[in-house]
Length: 235
Length: 221
Picture 1 (cartoon, rainbow over the protein chains, first blue to last red):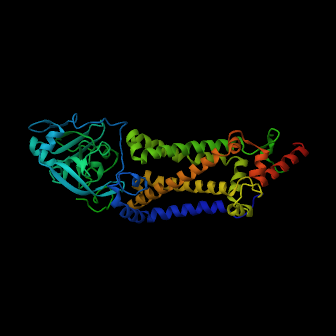
Picture 2 (cartoon, one colour):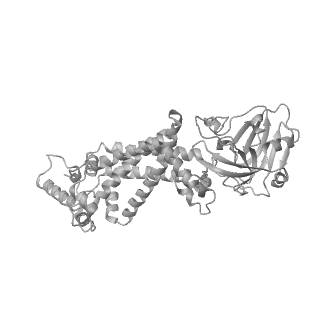
């Protein structure tokens, strides 16, 4: 019979041991890896750096079967609910408003972080002032034109200057995959608050938990102070 | 007399029995589940595929279910004596295996290789170990709230890297299979040509021929 050293068992146990060590020391290894790769991530025309596991860069969590393509021409943002002047805005209308730019890290609640992302667009606060918020409004609800995704902020949160209705990202128009042509960017909160493919903004009497919040994530998603995480703040 | 499950059924002339029906079933089910895991992992992980397919919750559900089911074919297979005997063969490294790994002309038929060569043994133990690590880290990610956040990050890190390693090893496995029609016949029908066995697994071929001869000599009873 094939006697001899039980090499198979040793390989197996060795891998389980390495796996356990990896779970314990993985976070430090991952930080080192991302520091190394971060400089190339945002400006990598080949996209190859995205193939390195946990190497950084954006990941794409699309929740519906497909998202319709909206061009600059046929895009519309509807603003309604408890406002004085309900509006339907085109890209050109947004471009005509006061522009705000931000350079902030993008932190996902699952752990990945993209450093120093350049964002541009209209500050949500400016947009709210333009349509006029009724005194009874307490929250702002966002819906995606993917047909499923929803988010919301309290009115106090929504008035911060670091929340954008973004039309530019990384120095160019927001691409479809990144949620373009128009997406929300909530700098101080985890990525799931930054509703992609923004289609509608509704002023309402109360905050309603959004898509991921129905699945257990925190509604007040401050980076470093929610979801049991202790990441460095982003804004 | 000690039962010899592999010789109870007779192969056609010039053929040797290599895998029982149970073993082939275990191989196929494990392969199918692993294939589903890899396909759904690709959708969850590779940006353009994630965008094209979407439906993240459904894809995640399929991935988790097929991953959790991966050990089942192995556990069910343990009921088979032939499968347990092969696990033992895969586990043990004989002096021939070490020589096979060092040899530059390992496929010349010079070495009396057993039923599995050293490469197949390492493949089997790597995939088993990797599957256990994936199950453990997958469990941590699936029930994320039960563990410290750092464990969750660490589990994701390990899960992602081992996924790449598994992918590379499986590509190698399939590559060797495409170049070896007799081995594929063995996994499909259970029997392999004796000439192939004498070339690739001489030690096992001789052992098997002797066992069948012994079976012929003594009537079953």
